[in-house]
Image 1 (cartoon, one colour):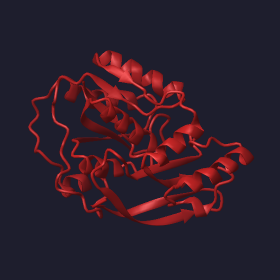
Image 2 (cartoon, helix red, strand yellow; image 1 turned 30 degrees about the vertical axis):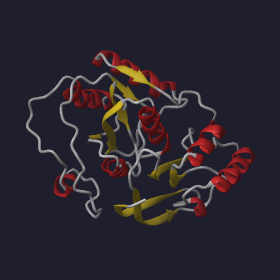
Image 3 (spheres, rainbow, N blue to C red; image 1 turned 180 degrees about the horizontal axis):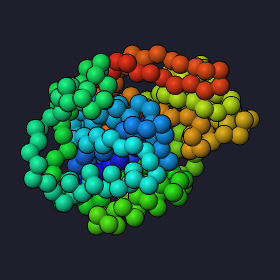
Length: 261
């Protein structure tokens, strides 16, 4: 089966990509949404450009899509972009993304974008879209409705996974997860930029119980970026600055490049 994976660069889309490869399916492309507005009800906002680095690491074509994040239009913009791939397009495109093109589209221009960052061309037939949704009925329903209109299948391998088991499975199977934003009581500045290990999950579980937040971040408590994973052939090295307001914070990744595992 030839599928696309909707990838934010975070932990859940990394798991979804890995799940797809374990089934023996062909990941024909990774699709990443860049929200140009302040927020989105559907999509992750920070550090999504790392998905491009992940795609290059695994030699998977990448389709970055910029949307405004407006609830009324964001799914239409995504559907239009996917239709050009699912149905085919006659538009002439080069084989790879250049750093200049990505900079013109306001993707990070200080990064060392790898030369093998391939474009997602018209590769019909695409048979499905794999998404890392866990508990958002809003997200799952809208994606399924879009896939029905595109006449492709929607796959949600993480749907209703237990949060504790999910976090432990990610770490035990080699997903290097960095916290890139925090917006919940109980998690302080020391967690920003931390790459999670098994002992961190133990601590996170205690804090989640004490402060009553979701250990997997499904309530928007934190966002993540994956720096290496079982399906990636190299790891991502970052240079970043931590910003903390006293109650919430984020990681500004101003440099990134691929490095051997």
